Length: 403
Ligand SMILES: Cc1cc2nc3c(=O)[nH]c(=O)nc-3n(C[C@H](O)[C@H](O)[C@H](O)COP(=O)(O)OP(=O)(O)OC[C@H]3O[C@@H](n4cnc5c(N)ncnc54)[C@H](O)[C@@H]3O)c2cc1C
Image (cartoon, rainbow, N blue to C red):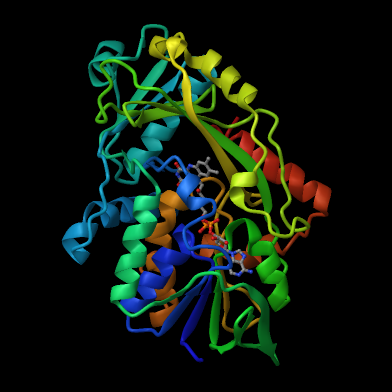
C-alpha cells in the first residue's frame, strides 16, 4: 500500500488534518491503534474560545470557529455548534486587571469582546450572581459543541467523502526513515509507504515521535469535568462562563451544567510505560471538582443543589511554553507533528488541520505557524523533571499565564 500522507492518530487533530489533505487531493491514510475518535477528543468539554494570548492563536481560533459554523454549508454534513457566547469573570483585583488587559489585546486582534456590568451579565446569564465580581467580559461569538464526538464524526464522514482511507485498530509500531527521509510506517497490519507521516497521536505523540527518532518534549497531565443532573430553567443558549481566578469553567450540558477545573496541583500521568492504556482509564478524583464547585457556587448558586450525572477526564498533552507543537520536525524530512495542545486541541483542530494541510500541500500556510515550530523546544533541552515542572506550571496557569 502507498499513500501521499499517513496520519497517525484519529483524534480531533488527525481527523481534521486528514479531511483537509484529502480535500486538497492528497491520498491519505488515517490510522488509529484503537477505534477512531475514541481517546481524548470525545471526552473534551467542547468549548471554543476566541480570546487568545497571541495574534497567531487568535487567528487560528477564529478560523476554527468559522469552519465549524459553516461546516454544514460547505460539506452538506451536519455539525451542530451552539453559539452561546461566553463570559469571562474575575473576582480578585489582580485577575480583573489581567482580564482587562486580555480584552484590550484581543480587541486589537479583531475579537468581538466587551467589558459588561453586573446587570448586563445577569441578563446574559440569568443563573449568575455577578454583584461581587470585579470584571466581566462578554464574547458573543464563543461557542460549544454539546457532544464533542459530533465534531469527530462530521470530519470523519467528510474525510471519507474526499477519499481518506480510515484504518481503525491499526497500530503504528515503526516509522521508516532512510537517510533522513521518511519512507512510511510499519503497522500491526504490515508496511505502508508514504513520503510524509504526521504524528497526531495525542497522549502518545512522544512515543510515535520516538519511532521516527524524534524527541518531542511533551508531558501528559490529567484534566477532569463533570455534568450535573438537569437544572430548572436551564437553557442551552446560556453562555459558557470562565472563572479566571478559580480556573473553573461551566457551560450548559444536557439540561444541566458542565463544570471543569484546572487543578492547582496538577497530576502528570505518563502513558509511555502503560501498554494498552485507554483514556477512560485516567484516574479520576471527584474531590478536585468538588473544591472547584465550592469556589464558584456563590456566583452560580444553582450548582449547590445539583447531583453529578457524569464525571469524566483525560490527558492534556502539554509543552513547556504552553503552545502547540505543529510543523515539520527538523532533520527528518517528511516527518511532521501536530500536538502539544495544552488543553485546546479540540477547538483548534479545524484551524490547525487546515493550516498544516496548506503547509504540507502548498509549502506555505495561510497563517504563519512558525511560533509553533517543534524546533523551538529542542534549543534548550530540559531534563525530565524540569520539563514536567514547566508543563505542570502551564497547566495550572491555563487562564492566567501572566500571574
Ligand atoms: C476533560 C477534558 C476536557 C477538554 N476540553 C477541551 C475543550 O473544551 N476545548 C478544547 O479545545 N480542548 C479541550 N480538551 C483538550 C482536547 O481534548 C485535546 O487537546 C484534543 O482532544 C487532543 O486531540 P488529539 O487528536 O491530539 O488526541 P486524541 O483524541 O487522543 O487522538 C490521538 C489518537 O492517536 C491514537 N494513537 C496513539 N498512538 C498510536 C499509534 N502508535 N498508532 C496509531 N494510532 C495511535 C490514539 O489511539 C488516539 O485515538 C479537553 C481535554 C480533556 C481531557
